[in-house]
Picture 1 (cartoon, rainbow, N blue to C red):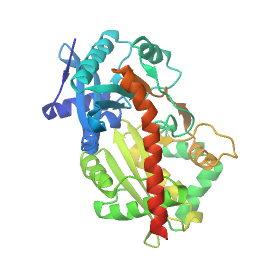
Picture 2 (cartoon, rainbow, N blue to C red):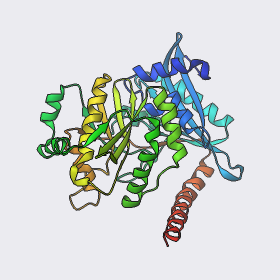
Picture 3 (tube, rainbow, N blue to C red):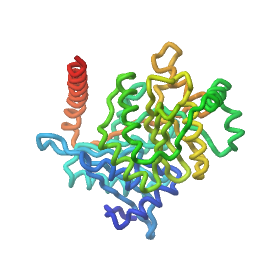
Picture 4 (cartoon, one colour):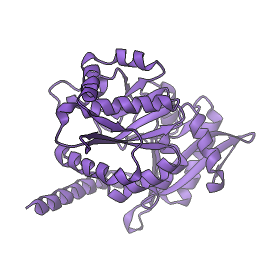
Length: 358
């Protein structure tokens, strides 16, 4: 059993492993590394046994300022059968040696593994990883809490399992003339981004640059791994979303909506069209992505939980983040400074927006 770093000549082989592995994830594909390329350097590492890939990790490497080194992020990885301890140990060896070459302080993992999986927790603890799981809500790099829906049943069965109000809202949107473009072309991307800007201003969160979404569309859509949905009322764009697709899994990623026409319930119909699309692609799992945990009704984000739960999915809590530490002293310094830096950046952006609005 041996690890090695691969290049683009093995892209299809790498993706085929991700596509067919039960825990393969879109954020571990070759294409996702290309989307992130620029600020990050993607490194694809595999472990082989008798010529077959038995473990893989797509690592994103980011340089720190002032020549302080770098760090790795293994988003929704690694991907392997954790029962195969030999593959796990060889993967660890590969990541450690690669980390040394890249002068990395640590490698962050947030696997697509439910919190109740004690084997994965034990393996990480035995390897000396730091449990870096944060608090409730969206405080991790990836959301720790999601709703997931088994979409193997027929469309009739799925609709029947929706909450009554959700089913009503889907039909209301159809009745009122809301139209969903389930494969919006690239020229509609500015419409989507405009809606996303409106949503960010309304709900007070930061969004990435337009060029990021251009790369997202150009790379993932071209590979059949993404789709853009746009919702219209009387030819006016009122909602939109981006979705991921890999193997038998689909993910709702970015959603956006206008301030007007919300009474037409466009997002309910959009989600239903996205589920129908995922089913048509052979998917059996639809992931609604993040929610802020099972919060009480007076929580400001309870409406988001209620909306996603209305489609009949299962609440899933992932095991959270673990850090593989290479340089303990620098790692502690990073953990102290990074939150302060992020807070400063958010404050600067907020001040710029406030000054611009005057």
